[in-house]
Length: 317
Image (cartoon, rainbow, N blue to C red):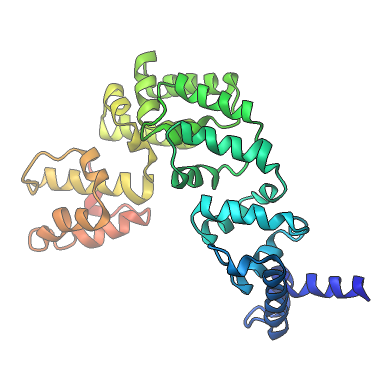
């Protein structure tokens, strides 16, 4: 009977089961069953009365995501540690969805807590640790010596502890060995025609560059060199330009600036980099809206370019 009840509960709280059986409308059985299960866990563990209380639906979601980890009373102390660290239940849930469920069974005292203490010593606050670990869930559960090696590697890239880019540098080199990092740096040098000093500048300013795929980098280098006409050193000092979407931002905004310059509608010399850094709202207000009379089609053309199209007015010869 007990085995049968466990089986029924597992079906009740399984998202795949409920979505398959009731795609348009949640099953009342699933909702009430998960709520009852969550309530029992909350009452038995004391989480409902903690400084970071979880509702019954919250706990039911945790159980559905990590049924094999949500056993034993030690899970309570883990949750009481992780929830303040990650700042919210929502953040912790994001971590679990990205494969971080192993944290519910990792050794808190010998692995997780020493890693957190060390990262704090490196100048990372809890909010930055959360931002680092959500995309890299294995970080906190990794051997502390390995985490220290990652920090040393980030520093060798020229990104010191306590700086704004340190978290990004640590994320970029996480679980990469020296050979892979060297190969990525070599590719960047050849693709963007950078010297050793220039590639160091580029990586320091935008460490996530090391995570970009070869195809993505090649696509952007061809555009920036051959269409825009930028120099390697210019890109190196503004390497975060490589973080923006080609179709959603780089190409459409380049088209707008070039159109305005060719038609004498740009009052000042505006660089592509400055235009790229603007928010969507500011870009439209400063460069699109003032041209309603002289270029009434510009807003429509820009919207089309953001969808990957090339309007006739943006086909330059």
